[in-house]
Length: 208
Image (cartoon, rainbow, N blue to C red):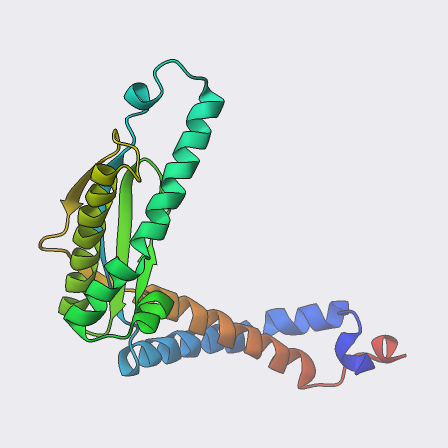
């Protein structure tokens, strides 16, 4: 244990530099391993639909301070976040796609950073078409439910919603191939460095 955690000596660093072919080979092998994992067990597809949310600050708070506008934005945003994950909205997706509500909330759906302007509705699935349909239906169900809440007075009447991207959604893997290549290369490079350092006895000065 003492040997493992003793500081590196100059000889150790020289040994690492001399073995550059070995750790470069390890990095290349790691990249190949990462690519193999990607193609054998690829990550799910991710699709994104967008709803434009306009809080109309000028109309909602024409005479008030920035602080009051901030609290207004925060309050209405929290209402809309809760609405996006509400039983009414998520149950519609669950019924249409035969996916349990717990799975939708826990793994398949993600809401992008909500603010004024574009709200992004992400959906993940192993089937690209299902991912695109999930994202599209979620965005449209949210916009429809939000408008009902505006009409009922629960949400400020000046807030406006427009589904700007829900048709012909492009999908891509949630994690790109480059991420697997980088992770595999870094992992095996680190392993190669440790193999080089601890495959020979450390200098006596470090052991003492």
